[in-house]
Length: 468
View 1 (tube, rainbow, N blue to C red):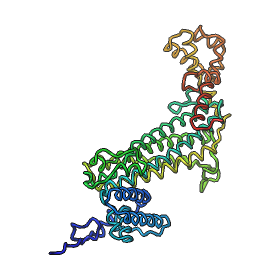
View 2 (cartoon, rainbow, N blue to C red):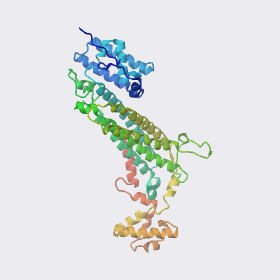
View 3 (cartoon, rainbow, N blue to C red):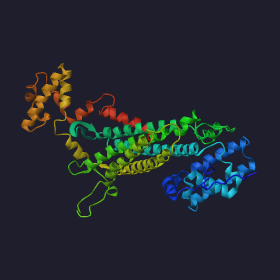
View 4 (tube, one colour):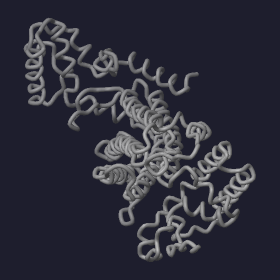
C-alpha cells in the first residue's frame, strides 16, 4: 500500500498543496500583527469548545485536561510577553493551535473538531466587541455624569443660545450641558442595542454549512455568556453586521465629541471667553509665548475623521461580498480596533477635561444682553394679547430694526416707543423683555425655564445614581 503523500506547504491546512507558500504571500496575508489582541477570547472559546467535545465523546477526559492545561500555559506566556508569535502561521488562531499541538501532541490536533476558523474568528471578534461595548458604556456613563455635575454647579446661570452661530435666545448653562447629556444618552442606548444583537454565538456553524459531528452549540454559547446561537450557518459565516453596527455607534459617539470639541474651541477663544480649559489640557506655542491652545478638543475633533474612516472601510469591505466567507473579511479588524482605541481614549480624556472646566458666567450673562435676544418673547407677548403670530412677528421685526438704527436693545425702549409699534403693548411688557424673564418663561417640557431645568437636573442625577 502506498503511503499518502505529505503536504509540501507545511501548513495545518495544507494537505492538498504540493508547494510551500511564497514568503511574499505570507507577509501579505498575515494578520497576527494585529489580531493577537484577541488571544484571551480565542483561548476562552477553545476551552468552552473542548468541554463540549468531551461531554459528547469526541475528546477523552485526559485529552480535555491536557488541552485546557496547555491553553492556560499559552495564555500565561502571552500575558508575560514570552510567547513567540510566528508570522508564517498567519493569525492568532493558528499560532495558538500550533503551539498547543507542539506541547501536548495529537490531543491538541483534535481541538478543532466541529469548528472552522470562520466561526472561530467570529466568536473571538464578538466576545471582544461585547467587552468593548461594556467598556464604552461605562465611559459614556462617566461623561454624562460630568455634564450633570456641571449642570448642577451652574444651575440658574444664563448664556446665549445660538442658531446659525448667531445669538438667538438666552438659555441656562445647565440646559446646554443637559443637551449633551441627552446626546450621549442616545449613544449609550445604541451601544446597548448593539451589544444585545451581537450576543449570539456563531461557534459550531463551522466553515459555512454546519457540522455533522455531535456537538452542542447551545452548551458552548451558555458557557461563554451568550444569549443564544445564530440561526443560519451561511449567514453567520459571512456576517459582519455586528462590526459595522458597533463602528457606526462609535462614529456617532466621536461625532458628538467633535461637536462638543468645536464649542469648547470657540468658547475658550478670546472672542467668546465663555470657558477656561484647565492648563492641564492645553499646550503653548513654540514661538508665541502668550498662547494657550485647546489642543485636546482639537485633537478629539480631528480624530473623528479616523473613526468615520473606519466605518467607511467596513461598509466598503462588505458591499460586494457574496455569501459566505471570503478572505476579504480579514480586513475587518484593524478599522474596528482603531475605532475602539480612538473613541475610548477620547471619551476618557474629555470626561476628565469637563471635570476641570470653568465657565465665565459674567461674560456669558453679558453676552445675552445684546442682539435683541428677547425678540421672540415680545412676539409671544403679542400673541397672548390676541395678535396673530405672523402679524406679531412683523411688528417685532419693526421694533428690532428701530433698535438697530437707534443703537439700543428692546428693554431700553420707552413704553411709548414700544406702544408705537402696537397699541396692545402695556407696561407689563418689561417682564418678558428681560433676559431672566425670557429664560423663565420657557416652561414647555424640555425647555430652558428655571423649573424645567431644575427638574431635568434632578431626573438626570437620579438616572445616574447621583441623588443625595
